[in-house]
View 1: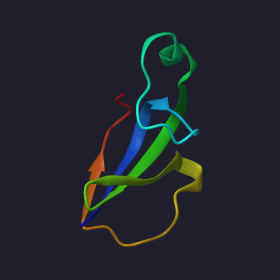
View 2: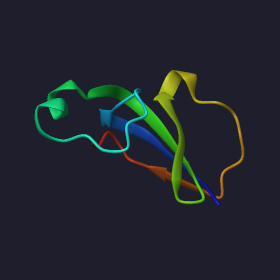
View 3: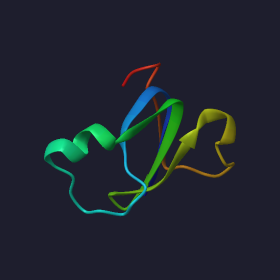
Amino acid sequence: MRTLIKNIGTLAGIDETGRGRVTGPDMKLLGSIENAYLIAERGHISEYGLMGELPEGRFTEEIDAVGGV
């Protein structure tokens, strides 16, 4: 199953370091993306980015977040 969530107003909690868990003061270091998309495959986030950079593809499900967080 490949799910696309599109038109996300703010995608928060972005961490490019690959850490499995972030706690305490490190929470202040997490980033965010405005006007984003997120792709999930088999229950895991496989990709995310700016809506303007959304790759073409087929999705089992598409969810329009309508500017939500």
